[in-house]
Amino acid sequence: MERGAKNMPTGKPALKASRVAALAVLALTVIATTPARARADDDWEAVPDSSSAGTAAPAPASAAALNRSVHSSHRRAASSAPANAAGASNVTIACGERAVAPSPKIKRIVSEINGAWGSNVRVYQSVAPEGPHAIGGGCIFYNPAALAMLLGLRLNLNDPNVLTPMLYAIFAHEVGHEVHQDFAASRTAVPNQIKELEADRFAGYTMQKLDVPATGLAPYWSMTGDEFGIGASHGTSEQRVAAFKEGWHEAEWNRAENSMSVTSATQESIAPEDSSAAP
Image (tube, one colour):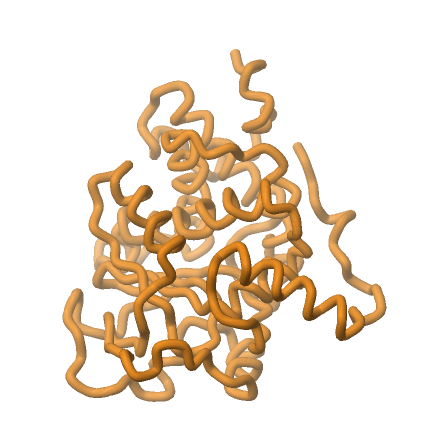
């Protein structure tokens, strides 16, 4: 299994201002969004539903609602950083969260993912500087500044050949929470880590169905493991990469997406880019 821990830039001196700016600009240029200014250390996650399913609230969400998608340490980062003001005059309330329309590229990616599953998950650009997340009611959100910081600084991802596939993986993960109905009462007893790993499996499955290359993705995906986060419960690097690979091969072998349990996913030994060697 490919591991990205040795590439994680922990313990290094802080990046110089020019380097930080360059990475942020690169990520934002690729995803065609606004300049990155807010830092978000979290990766993507599911968010408990605190709004009416699928309905828009008549009034702006409360401060507590805007922060429900981040852990306490990230909430502090979000509150001290300016929110993205792009399209501020067109702010709407979607699934209880203040948001604006997504960028054309992100909208297209989510549309392709929906097309693969016959789903109708809606994507929005969050006004709050939070990482990508899902909310019950069929809504997923991202903030361009926080996303740029995640990709450019936390993951140090500056290869355009990997950046776009990573966006597919991130948004397929979020759509997976909706398709799996993770916010339904019937899923209440399922541990959060299992839901997250199942969303990783869904992402791998979806990318294989869409023929989106996963070559070189595993090292970056592994860097989103819990050992690199703060109070997260998404699974370790090994578990997340294994779940992603399991989904990839379930699709490649034309099996149901949920035909194997993610608790045994670490038995996967073949990387998606080595699929020609599959039995």
